[in-house]
Structure formats: structure tokens, C-alpha cells
Image: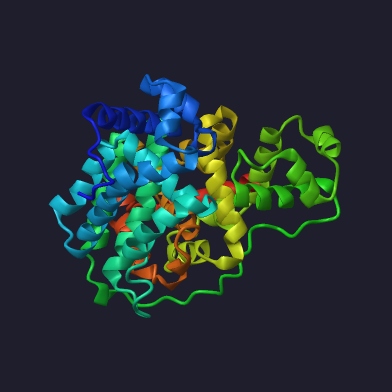
Length: 413
């Protein structure tokens, strides 16, 4: 040990442990942007001065949390996904769902820091080695990404969203059991049996260009400011400057920032794949591949960041959370209207909707972290997954899709 470095006392080490536990708890309670050293110290049972003696500022605390606790959890989660993709069987795939079932607060916090580090320079410096050495290790080193890496990173993306959702709404054991069966079928499909599918360019830009009316201008400005800075740091004043209007003009239309973001979110969610009228084609060959392909598009970077930041902020906002959940309602509302379909098949159709949305959203989120995601051949995951759904998930899909199409035409969706 160097002479100028003293061994830390057992009390100091105990204080470190208490601060880290409190830091994780505060990340989950208020979100990364609202964590304060004062609140962390209070939760840890320490004086304000003792906390500041250990950390200069909140960014230093976040860096310590990542390096001492959270990075190891992210590595474990990623390695579970890669092991299942490389050697798929009941044990390796089951380990993923065991991890999800036993998710800890540290796992949730690791996801939050991974997804927000891009806009916190000191934290991003520490998170970047994980991104490069694990998430990007094959994407950057080879022009031909293996099927196992494609499948592994897609499952990792799904787990990211699943962990966020489970933290807010709880673990759904029935859904996870169905998904585990689908994933095992997906991963055991021989890559040589998967042919390429024709895809159109990543031109389905979902964030509309600003229009002449103020509401459209504000939606477009909100996408950019929230996506770049996060929900907390996206002030009404900054959005007003971006939209070239006064804060007062915004408040005449929206009582609060929360209302403005919800309105922008509803505009954003008028996406092609989110509408009932297009979901009927989702199990056509190439459709899921196209969803994932487009989700990584750099032309949709604003959508990716805004969707991510709104989802993260919903953990502390009931109204944002309800706005996100309402997006499922149009699709879910059709399920009870289907006839000659068993209750089990109705339930599985709901799971189908959720799984495709979670995978697509997960890939969207990961695209904000991994710029080289566009090199991924998502068809090596999407096509086997589509086949598994048709075989084990909703084998009566042809009848379901026929009825959904009739309902769409009748109700004018």
C-alpha cells in the first residue's frame, strides 16, 4: 500500500455501504436528476457534513454507485442474455426469468444509470467501458454480427423494459411463463434456417416536422428538449425558447409541464406500428424485423430519447404513467370483442401485444446508448420469435386477425 494511502476504518467502510444503499433507494424514489446528497445522507443516518466529506457532489456519488455496485449487476444481466443466446436450453433461458423474478433495487438503479448516463458527462465516462466492452463488443469489431449476439442484445433490450415495468407494476408470473416458452423456441431456432427478409429504408420518421400552429410547434420543441436534457431539466422556459414563444403562451394551452409532455407523448404515439389498423399485420413475415430495424434509425433519434425520458419520469409521476398505459388501451380494448376465442387465447393475445411492444421499446431505449445498434440483423431474433408466437403463443392468429380487421373496418380505427 502506498505510504500516502491509509486503510479506511471499519466505520468509514460501514458509512460507505449505508450511503450506497441510500443512494440506490433515492434513485428509485426520486429519479437520477432529483437525487441530493442531503437526502442520501439523511436516509443513511449520517450528518450532512459526513456525506459531503465522502462525495464532492451528486455526480461523484452516481459514479461510485455505478463502479462499486451497479456495473456488476448490468454485466450479470447481459451475460445471462448472451449465455442463453449462445447455449439455449431450459436452464440458461430459465436463468433470465429467475433474474427478472428476483430483481433487486440495484438492478433497477443500474438500468436507470445506464440509460441516463449519456447526458451526465462524468457518469458517462464510467459507464462507457461497459457499453464498449459488452453491448458493442461485437457490433464494433465485425461487419457481420453473429446471430447469438443479435439475439442476446435483443433479449437484453427486452429485459431493460421488463425491469422498468416490473418495478412500477409488479411481476406478472403468467406473462413471464408464456414469454419464457416463446424465447426458448426462438433461441433454439437454427440461424441457418432464417432467410433475409426485404425491408424498406428507415424512413418511417415518427416525429412530425413543426407546423404552423403553436401546439405542433410546442410538441416538436418538447420532443427535443426532454429528449436531450431529461424531463426534470426540460423547463417551460427552455421549451418556449425552442418554440419561439413566451412561457405565458404555453400556460394558456397547458396548465403545467406535465400536461405539455403528456400532449406531446400522445402526438408521438400516433406511430404506424402502434395503431390498431396496422397491428393486424404484425405477424406477417418481416413485420417485427421492420419494427426493430426502424427503432434503431438515427432519423428517429429524437423519438428514441423523448420516449425513454418520458418512461423514466413516469416512475415518479402517476399521470405520466397513466398516459403511457393508455397507449395499450386501443389494442387491448378489442380483445374482449373477439368471438369464438377461448379465455386462454384472449390472455395470450394480450401477452403478444405486450411482448412485441416491450421488445420494440427496449430496442428503442438501447439505441440511445449503443449507436452501432443499426448494424444488428434483427431478423435473426424477430423471425424465430414470430414463428414461435404463431406456433405456441396464438396458434389461432389467422382467425383473430380476421376478426380484428372486421372490427377495425366496422369501428373506423
